[in-house]
Image (tube, rainbow, N blue to C red):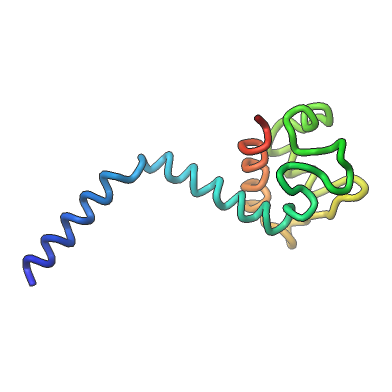
Length: 112
């Protein structure tokens, strides 16, 4: 029994050593949360960063800049009070945390 406990502890130590630093890991987790929320709420109209309703308003860096959308706050503001053709995502529909995660995912993913 003592030997099994030793192997378990050794496996934990080796496994922890192979993980990226916590800050990197947390950043990846935040992007994963944003991606999941994006796919669930935005993916139907904005697949691959496009725009099925208004093709000139994609999530590309150029289109976002042209439309004055530069920060995560700008994206959240647009999600909360969109223009014609876009669904409104009020806080009851989409939490502030998920809205922010989506905004950061968009800027990290489609702004290349």
